[in-house]
Image (tube, rainbow, N blue to C red; front, side, top):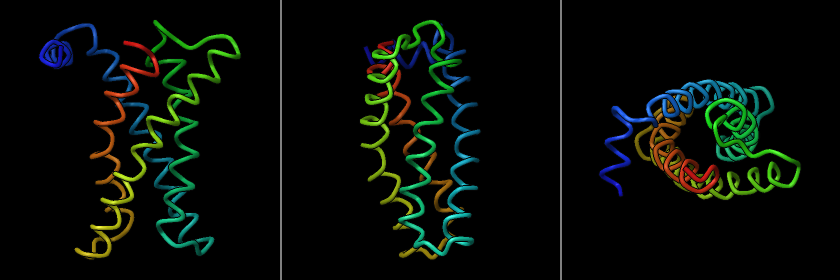
Length: 141
């Protein structure tokens, strides 16, 4: 099953879907970075607290965009299904928050990398985890 999934990422029907997921991810990562900067530098929040708030905002934005575009072949429609999908993606992406925050913390505190650069690295690392779980569970691919 995993081998088939990886093969489809290169030349199968998942290629377009993966590209769209990445485009949405890059866009929402930019939004998350801008929000993080606003919360930390403009509002004076600690970078980890700012990261938590910016992550949750972009979880909702990502769901809206992915449901409408990336997974348009199998979107969550109707109020109940849409809200249930939002709950599921919050579970998936919420479970990735500790991964992202751990990487962010380690890079900032132990290696002294600027928090925005560290956050970008953390987004990429946790992104693979999020895609696999969202594709398989939230949208049932």
